[in-house]
Image 1 (spheres, helix red, strand yellow):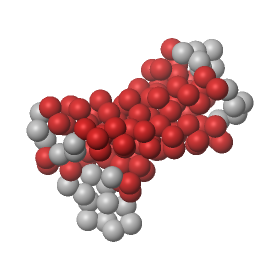
Image 2 (cartoon, rainbow, N blue to C red; image 1 turned 60 degrees about the vertical axis):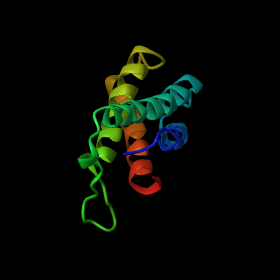
Image 3 (spheres, rainbow, N blue to C red; image 1 turned 90 degrees about the vertical axis):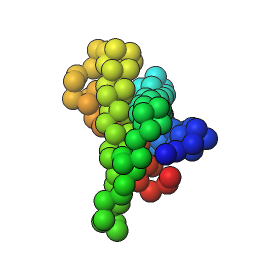
Length: 122
């Protein structure tokens, strides 16, 4: 199980990485899109980890036996929650008039950021 300071640390790192990725890879660079993607990449994993902590689910924290990519169910859930949160916030917010493809790309980058941070940084 993760303590709350670790959850906050991971959420903050995910938010920063997502904002950087979206700023670099999603044209045109719009502050609202970058900030929203970053917030979603922080809020999604924080919500997921709050659920895991609340239901006392230690089995989700078992890493795969792959040295280069030791992903766990907990890591995967963080990525999934980040994608879902980003898709909703971006699609209903700053990318509301954009194509679904643009929203999906930005949401996917937020999810990748959350997954990578979870796997490698905490």
